[in-house]
Structure formats: C-alpha cells, structure tokens
Image 1 (cartoon, rainbow, N blue to C red):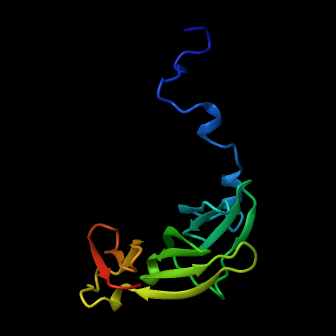
Image 2 (cartoon, one colour):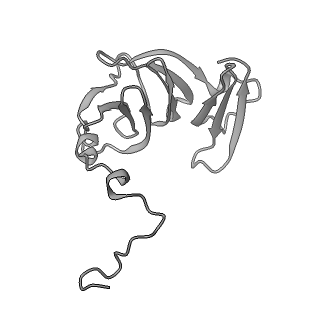
Length: 168
C-alpha cells in the first residue's frame, strides 16, 4: 500500500466515486428553518427531481431541488404537522406523511411551485381495532388498489399494531 493510502483500498464491489454520493449542502439546508430542526426521513420525486425531508422538530416537510436549494416548506396554517415521520411519494404531486404526534396519516399536495396543502387525513383511532395506547403513526404503505397499511405504535415505539384499511 502506498504511503498515505492505508485503509483506503477500494473494494471490488464498491460503486464508482461519481455514482456514490453527491456533494450537496443538505445539512445546511435542513437547518434553514430552525437550529432545532431534525431530519428524520426523506422521499424523492423521481420525475422532479425533488427531495422531501421530514423535519420532526420543525414540524414541517421541506422540499428541495436536485441542487439542494429549498423550494418550499410546509406552512402550519395549510398543513399542520406534529412530529412528521415517514414520507412516501405517491406520484401526481402527492406525498403521504406519517404525522406521528397527531396520530394520523396526512396526504399533502406538493406542487412544483406554490404552497404545500393538506388534502386529507386518516387518524389511527378511526380503525375499529385501534388501541388507545398504540396510536402514534410512524409508517404507512398504500397498494395500487387503495388498501392502506398503517403502523401505529405506543409511546417510545416499543409496541405496535398494523392497521389495515380497505380503501384509503
């Protein structure tokens, strides 16, 4: 190993440097809203390309372009969130958000330009088998036929239930 190269050998199955990681200022952009911001999840619009960031402590969803520029941040007046967690981009400028401390899922309209707007929500307690001690919504998945799976957990995320809704 040449001097100064110890521990930097390239694995044969590693990605080429150009395909690995883009050098973007995400850390700076995510702190844009508040020094207490906490990015907990991301989703990508493959057609955009836009990146959506769940800012748990800022209680918002931030939208960035491919260069890392902040395009828009959700406004509590039009999309009230409380510790947004998991994000799923559904296409057609629609984003599904697990709104943890409101104990619900939220469908947001996220246009390329303009404000983020809440379209609808679904509370964990609306399921007939929901348990009061397991209501914090931390994840969801939606099938093409509209079936929705919601993960509702207890405080501390130790115990959880998967609630299945026939149509979202």
